[in-house]
Image (tube, rainbow, N blue to C red; front, side, top):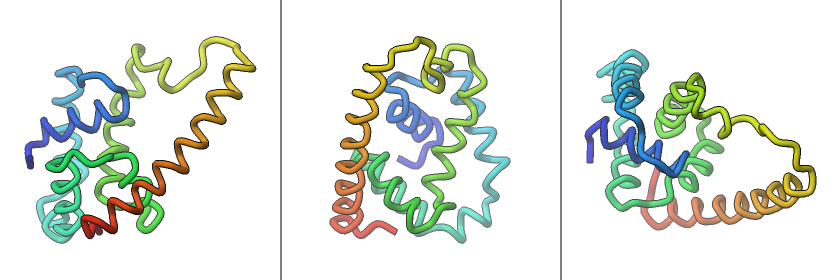
Length: 136
């Protein structure tokens, strides 16, 4: 893969289940250049290789990132996902992804319970994927 535009699109699709708008893709590429120097990326080659494997094999990005973040809170994958989140949170169309706009108490508890179970599943899946593909 290796293309920042493709990388941004995959990360956005994982987080929001929809294609990334062109404007935000451009901002991701710009932000990536500001946040990561060439020398820093070279020094973090193993982490970059992990991202390449995850993207090339279409592994569960969220599951892998969840486990890697626990080992290293500043892992390159975590930082790249943070860039996507930081970029989109200022756009009005993303407000529903970050805020509950309607008051639905029972539904909220059901969703919370489901998400708790999903988190456990994702964590176990991430541990398995890291073991299977020897990700760092």
